[in-house]
Amino acid sequence: MKISNEIKVAVLVIVAALLLYYGYNFIKGSNVFSSENTYYIKYDNVNGLIPGNQVMLNGLKVGMVQDCEFIQDGSNQILVSINVNGDIKIPKAVVAKIEAADLLGDMEINLDYSQVTASDFQNNLAQSGEELNGTLVLSMMESMSSEVAPITDKVNSLMGSADSLVQVLNQIIAGGQIENILQTTDQMTKVLHKTSTSVNNLMASQSKSLKGIIGNTERLTQSLTTSTQQLDGILQNATTFSSDLTDFSGELKKSDIGGMSSKLEATIDNANQSLSNLNATLAQVNNGDGTVTQLLKDRKLYDNMEKTLYDLDQLFLDLKENPKRYVSFSLIERKDKSKKKDKKEKKEKN
Image (cartoon, rainbow, N blue to C red; front, side, top):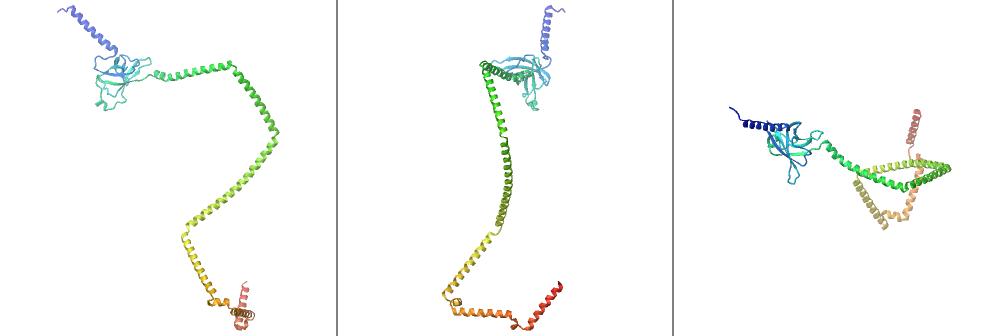
C-alpha cells in the first residue's frame, strides 16, 4: 500500500506541532507529562514578576508562573496565575510571597506554610482555580533603599542649611563684623589683665589683714565647737529629763487613779466630819455648858489647879534628890549591886 504525499505532509505537520508545543512548555519549565493545578493570586505590585518564574516551596520548585494580568476594575491590582504540581496539597492558609530569587533581579513566588495547621490539610485545602493570599517581600537592596531614602532627604536638608550658614558667614566677613568682634575681644582681654593685676596687688597689700581675719575665724570656729559640745550636754540632759517624765506619766497611768480618788474623797469627808464636831464643841464651850467652860471661866478653880501642879512639881524634884525617902533601901541597894556587877562583867569582857 502506497501512502500518498498529502498524508505524509499532514503527519509531519502534526508531529512538528506536538514537538513545538511540548518543547515550548519544556523550555518554560512546565512538566507536560504530569497533572497540574492552577491557582490565582492578586497583588498590588509584582515587582518585576513575569510568566515563567518559578514557584518554590521550602527551596523546592513545585510550579511556575503562568500569567500576569492587570485587573481593569479600578482596584489597580495584578492577577497572577500559577501552575503547581497536582501532587502538592495547598491549604487556603498558604501565603504566596513574591521574593527576589537572586541578586540579578529575578523574582519568584515562595509558598509560605508557616500559618498552616495539621487540620488545614484535612478540611481546608484550596481547589484548583481558587484564589490564594499573596504579599510582596522587598529584597535586601530595596529594603536598604527604602530605609536610606529618609536619611538622604535629611542629608539634603542639612546640606541646604549648611549652604545658608556659609552664605551668612560670608556676609559677616564681607561686612567687617568679625574684625570688630576681634577688636572687642582684644580690649576685653586687656581689661581683664588690668583687673587681675589690681586684684593681685590688693591681695598682697591686705595679706596681714586676711591672716588676722582667718585667725579670728578659726577662734570663732573653736568657740562654736565648744558651745556645740555644751549644747549637746544640755540637750542630752533635757532628753533624760523628758524620758523620766514619760516614765513617771506611765507609772501614773498604771496606778489605780480611781482608788486614789475614792480614798481622797473619804479623807475629805472625815476631815469635814471632824471640823463639824469641833465646831459643835466650840459652840458648847461658848454657851457655858460643861466642865470645859467652868475651867475656862472660873478663876478660883484655875488658881487651885495651878497650885496643885506646883506642889506636884516640888514632889517630883524631892523624889529625884532623895529617893530613899520614898523607896525601901534594900531594893535600891540590890539595884546598885546589880549595876556594879554588870559594869564589872563588861570590863572583864573588854
